[in-house]
Amino acid sequence: MELDFINNVNEFDESVVRLYNFNKEEAILFRDLIKTVIIENTTRLDLSKVPFIENRNCNLILGHFKTDEGILSSDHKTFYCALTKEAYITIISLLEPFCTKETKGYQYLYDIDNPIDFLFSPAGTW
Image 1 (cartoon, rainbow, N blue to C red):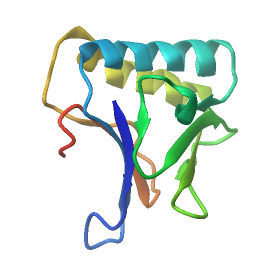
Image 2 (cartoon, rainbow, N blue to C red; image 1 turned 60 degrees about the vertical axis):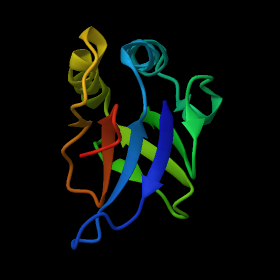
Image 3 (cartoon, rainbow, N blue to C red; image 1 turned 90 degrees about the horizontal axis):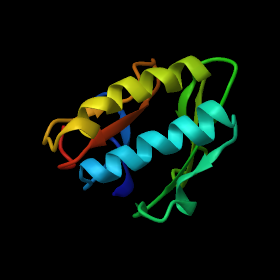
Image 4 (cartoon, rainbow, N blue to C red; image 1 turned 120 degrees about the horizontal axis):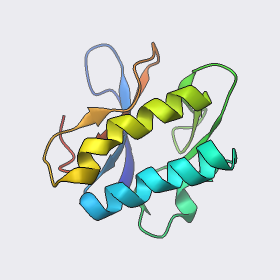
């Protein structure tokens, strides 16, 4: 599984933090990390410390927030995903299809009015 940031993916100056190039087993590991670390233990998940994720040009830290803000960054190198517990529970359900079979589909992991989207895509496409 790889993590990267793509700036200005469309004419609206929107950008994407993308998890890609993974198989069903890695999708399961990622889903289980979110369940255990974020939802159950209510601690932050620093993806640079996850052995099966290769950070290409950025790092992403997932954590709890009082409101759903999405992914934020001041330098386009370190990103923070600020979501409520309920939003992470929704992400778990969005990850399920990738955990049951190999697929070339993709999924945006939240729908928030934010200029940075969070893309989960085995093939890296959208």
